[in-house]
Length: 122
Image (cartoon, rainbow, N blue to C red):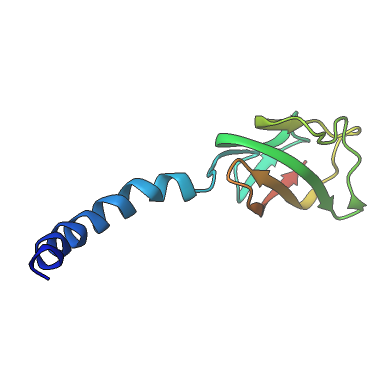
């Protein structure tokens, strides 16, 4: 019984340390950049639309919608793992509000999705 009492405080003291070390393993990738920047208004059609992360992601969906519906893009996501996914609209975007929705699989196996918005003015 005395051996159990002596090891219990040691195990209790180690638990927070082990949890602290495990948290980075469970962390998802974070968005570090969007283009255009979320919430901004750009003059004329943007040259690129995309997103960057602080780690590797496998982008499974990338869709831009605007006043005329879904925007046709030069590039669609594939099965490769990337830290950045940027593409161009096939045609100049007319003035209006746009929403970018993306979905991907992070390196820890979790599905992630986010969106960002921008506006285009003449």
